[in-house]
Amino acid sequence: MTGAPSPRLTLAVRLVLVVFSGYHLVTGIVSVCFPEFSEVFYQKLYHFYPTMTEQYKLVLKPWGALAFFAGVMGFYACWDPYRYRGVLVALVILLLTRVAYRSAFADELVEVFQIDKPRNAINTGLIAAEVVLFSVWLWRTRGLASATPEVAPSEAPAPTPEQGPTP
Image (cartoon, rainbow, N blue to C red; front, side):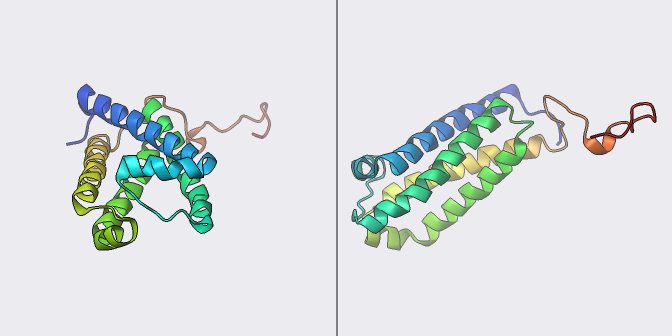
């Protein structure tokens, strides 16, 4: 059924996007700017126990940049989910990739990072719940225009000879 989703569904999407985005902004900043602190931060947050080598600290930089970017883009989608629905599609793809990774490599996560399987299952379930929520909202809003519609360049009226060419 195509049509506007319930206001509650849109509110839920926006609230989850606020939490998602805030979390990613914080973890991005921590990873890029405070690699030593990130060891304690991730131990508390994920029960994640990496070996803090210089190589690992260097890998934190692009990982943190991606997290920060995801957070910024999530806030755009939160501001106007209709207009930035493409961001939601990209986030669903990112989150599906994370679910697949956490599921396929659960044993390696235990072995390499000492992330226990129940903890990994909880985190994977939370990510999967975001995928379901965003996907349901996207499905319910397919075909709807932005909340702030604009005329596409191909639909704009052609300039008259008096107006001259369009820049």
